[in-house]
Length: 348
Image 1 (tube, rainbow, N blue to C red):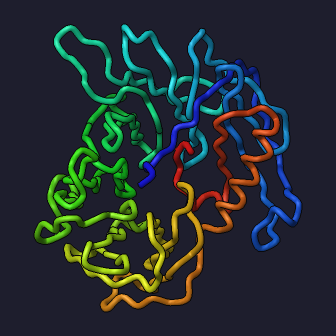
Image 2: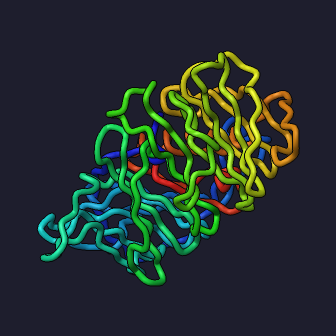
């Protein structure tokens, strides 16, 4: 299974004096539903530091300064802040997580695995991903071994790490308020599949399966509904030919077979109370397989597949292709009232 966040190595450098607001209008071929996209803001990395652009204007260097390298920039949900990873002397910490505003003014800084005389860290070897899990919380993750990753949750009001944990599949799911997390456990890479007992934990307590199932394979990352009331994921049991969708709601789980012979990893996504199951191809969300309308109802019923994220994914990919052609690495986008807003606010 691919991880929740993917690492893109930064290159790049930076220093800004002013930021202007621009309007952007893409050609009809790049517009889902023929709409014009306005106020698209882009942040990226060039020559070791952050650069910013509003609309179709030029990229402007952000005044972060110093010889450090910046990496993995990502917009906050409100589009007013940017979080990123900054390299530091490894004798001091593994890295710093920094938050700045659009003018490059520093708002918060938190050291990841700081070097302390009375504490030894044996967690992540590298910072591999960064994401906003709420308006005031971030999560940073890095590998420990081929299947396990270390996660640190950062509270910006306290400017401190408030939670850390290990996930066996690099696939935690944070509730929309950033206060609850579902993780996969019981199936690290060094345990043979037929002897593993994979399970899904919510805030440390097992919610699935009710009893251990040898060889149970979680073939998708768990995903929260937008209102935080439900979780959905896909599993494949060794005795079945098809994967199943499982939905947790109101403290109970319900499952239904996915009407497809697709093999390999899947992805699930929410649109209101509906769940879409897609094939995952090459680490990216692929073709729609099944659409489950009103996934909180019982029984679960599959409908003709639709894709509520297709417009946002197409727009993001078009934007990324264009700015990378301009020599910008690690691009991340934000805009008001456009399809991009339905995508996870994470480095990719």
